[in-house]
Length: 140
Image (cartoon, rainbow, N blue to C red; front, top):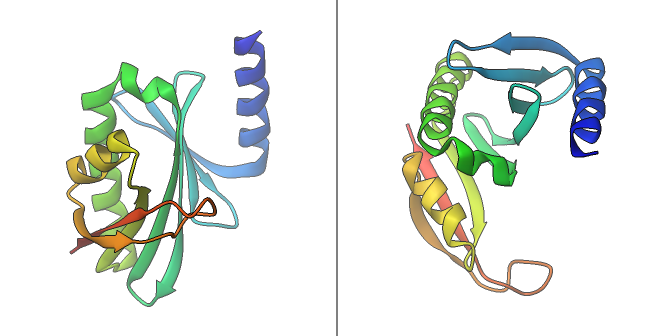
């Protein structure tokens, strides 16, 4: 049942995107046609969706939806994301990347730090549930 749902999602994602890259380490990357969103697969399994919004020239706000499946490939996934960020920074001229992590989400904080992001501050009552978030940034 789950495999069938994943296959459907993959087919829909492929139909909605125009650029597909398969990397030697087994990750597939599908780049969105009309946005700065990418979907990362390992085989037919969706691992993450990353997307960015330009705040100012050279400043990008990142957001991520990560699945539990990233824990099956922790080291190679982090290396892949680092490589991807470096490639995108070179292409786009971005000098600052930033994103927020819910203060209670320790795994998200570790993910940010493993990618070279630095904690810049706490945004009090930022969430819709009035939870605190931490602002992380990576200045290039």
